[in-house]
Image (tube, rainbow, N blue to C red; front, side, top):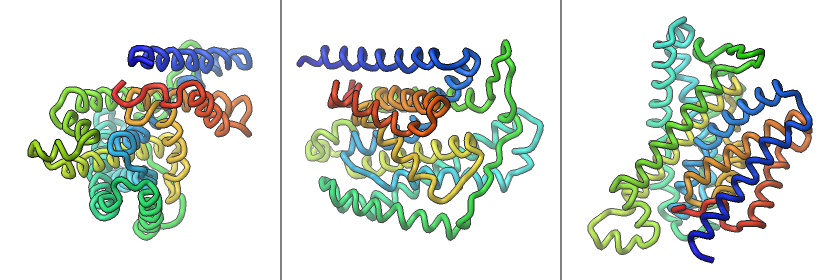
Amino acid sequence: MSESIVKRWGKEVAIGVAVVLLLLPLLGMDLKIYLTLTIAGLAMGMMLFLVASGLSIIFGLMDVINFAHGVCFAWGAYVAFSTFKYLNNWVTADSILLNFIIFFIAIIAAIVVVGLVGIIIERVLVRRVYGSHLFQILITFGGMVVLTEFIRIFWGPNDEVMPVPATFQGNWDIFDIIVLRYPIIAIVLGIIVYGVIQLILQKTKVGKIVRAGVEDPEMVQAMGHNIYLFFTAVFAAGAGLAAVGGLTMAIFNLQVYPDMGGAYLIFAFIVVIIGGLGSITGSLVGALMVGLSYNYVAYLFPAIAVGVNILIMVIILLIKPTGLFPAGK
């Protein structure tokens, strides 16, 4: 099958599934409820994209199965939690400027701290097991357990209420449709992150070196580039993206707890598999599918909300085993 046909079918399958996801729920719910759930689903999808994009870069581009990715998600949420607690006056201030400043400070703090955690994971654990998926699973799973225990040591074992900047609270009433403020902010943030990632991977020298290093690391090394240094940077970037996802999801759910990364790691793997390994566009499309389907089904049939995402993944893999948008598409 030619590359153009592969691309075409990936897009057609994605469009077909999206149409079903968007239109089918209308048969069973009121229009106002449908629009509210759709906005919430898009926001959840964007937050899942932030987690899955980092996993896709590590899993798809570096061929590393990283089970410690979920704990990076949790660490990001806790770093933001501490930042909000330390600068609580800015969080509670009735000022749009201060609220957005503290939000971006929390994002930067989460990226820096969890990026350093990612560097430690890559250099101490993952670098020893490149090329061996079995050992990658075992050693990163062990890393996840250890880092989760560190969360309990540093922040305690109990659930905590996540502070929310005052401006992000509340909603808008648009033609009797309740639109929460924070989901709109999460959607905009996800779009910005997607654009930045694509720009770096497709238009910069660093992105080209990383993509070439995945295909032929020896050749990249022979050309004078330290590919393992780039891989460490990619791993740190992936961890940082997971941290942003954890921060945004914690604000969305209004809580943080030590094991929060495990649940969303499952969603992240589903998203990456649906979208295609190594494809950022695929992660975005897959995340939106998962977010929308989860919200619709959780409202109509709560008992099967998680199962429907697995069903979508199975159906797409039966139609297109490489995922909707294989790497580089």
